[in-house]
Length: 191
Image (cartoon, rainbow, N blue to C red; front, top):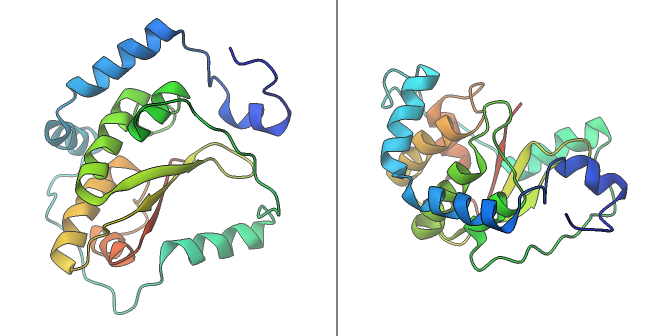
């Protein structure tokens, strides 16, 4: 356990730092063994997404997620002028959810699965985790993206992955893709 982690930050991370070094190493190995392509297939089946190519209609207009999410948070009164900063001692950013024991709640992938997904998206898009949680909960994961998809085909391919990885059921994959096109910040959430 990390001593001195208190205040509101401790409430958001729950069981963070509850794993021993041996358990963290075990989760790293488990994450490395995950075949992400097969994981997407199994996840689609588990969630009942019958046809991964049933994408829906491309929207006539799409607003980037970040301003939309910020507007919602502002209406809810959860945007604050301060943030809590936590430096996580890892060798690669995909290891962050494992070290923090983040995942495995609601429909959120397990920490090892999130590690595998982050490794996959880092290779493909340069996606790096930069935030966990919101003001009142720890159910979001924010990523900065160096190489976002720049065309519809690439955005649709990514949307099919994100659609089964996080809670996007209120949008069609095409709507998710439109929000991803050329956007260097992604927010994943699990209610």
